[in-house]
Amino acid sequence: MHTNFLELLKNKRDEKYREFTSQLLPKEVNLLGVRIPEIRKILKDIIKNNKHNDILKLDISSYVYQEELILHALVLAHAPISVVDKVELIKGFVPYINSWAVCDIFCADLKQTKSNLALFYKTFQNYTNSNYEYQIRFFYVLALNYFINEEMINDILNLISKQKYVGYYDKMAVAWFLSMAYIKFPQKIQKFISKTPLEKFVFSKTISKICDSHQVKKEAKLQLRNLASQVKS
Image 1 (spheres, rainbow, N blue to C red):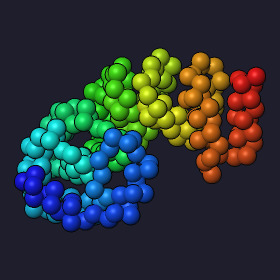
Image 2 (spheres, one colour):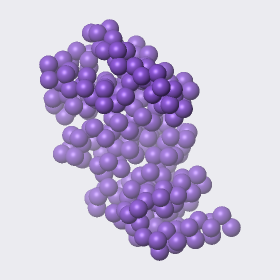
Image 3 (tube, one colour):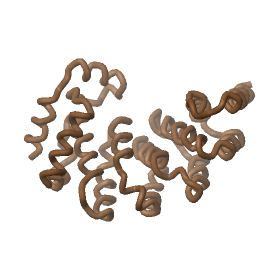
């Protein structure tokens, strides 16, 4: 089965796209150069023909290309299986995430999280204590997709206040989360970033990402930039 779907992916290779995408990802990531819409077409056929279990049984450690990981992630996200089984399979998959692209696509497609917020939150919040940056990123990207609400925001801000970082991509995820949370809770997030001793990169990148948003008013952006200037000085 692995050989079959790998051949499907190889038949969709686009060398120019591979060259472009390789500039956006860690150097150690191996790419075929398959566009995400093409991977989704393969996914659609797998789900339609009830072949998802064949994919989910494969040895993830044998994958060579990022596109194999993305296809596996998408099959797992869309597989018509129980949420309990899905959570267990997610826990087995996350340690193999090797780029922001695999992480972010996977999180965005895990739609079952919406109807199982408590389960997903309780299961994956411990990833914030991980020594692996993509486990940390997985939690915060999952959070920015599904956990920005009244019930969870304070708990997540508490996690961020104690967060120890491993690399670049976990820091970016926290800044991204805070910038998204600002749209819904501007006063709370502004107070948090002004009072909490955030890691310098996370602090500056959070303000930068908020100020890049078209949903934030000019006056608010000015306040945030002034805050950034005060911290620098």
